[in-house]
Image 1 (cartoon, helix red, strand yellow):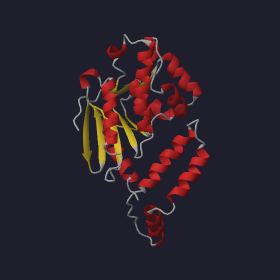
Image 2: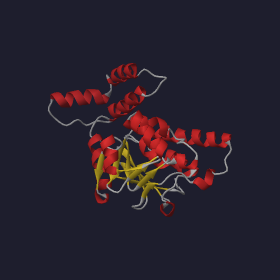
Image 3: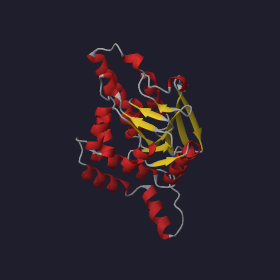
Image 4: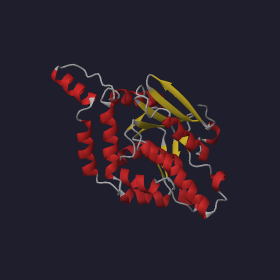
Length: 259
């Protein structure tokens, strides 16, 4: 499948999706967001894919916000529709059955920050900047930024950043728990790949159930504790469970099949 706004590359079992609007600091157009969702669907059931890295072209920005020109004249209904359809893709990222890591190289502002928060982990280069500056436009985040930022860093600090529109650097983001690791730009992609490769040695069915169980904790329509019990039980009787436990007792590395 060909794309207009993203680059898609698969190497050694890792799909790297690159937001490819470098001159626009990878600003998020509606169609770009939809292309991310389409790229993910192409590998959802591919057992050879261990995980996904999401990053931005160039070294200045992961994504410096939404493309304001695209929605500056929207009506209330058009604004809600934009948020719902974009939010559907962000939810797809959060609920994806393989690890999705944001490699944050530079500015991650507005929708760009929201996109990183939809990913399962965030690895930041030392020049990364995070922020939700929508209030400067008379807006609020529309892709669940008010929800995920609270989940990741707590209510008080989230409210401060959301209401002031202030940016924070990589080290502060790490201290707050917004990012998992801070590395140099040169090390950024390698760090993401090393994490995915480590996860890729585990049982893929178990990884998918971990993601689902953690997401259930934040889903008001689900009981996270019950989801964990059900997911735990569902793994019994699978090939991966049999292989994992047998390999442990035989003191050898497990050869998981995702079955």
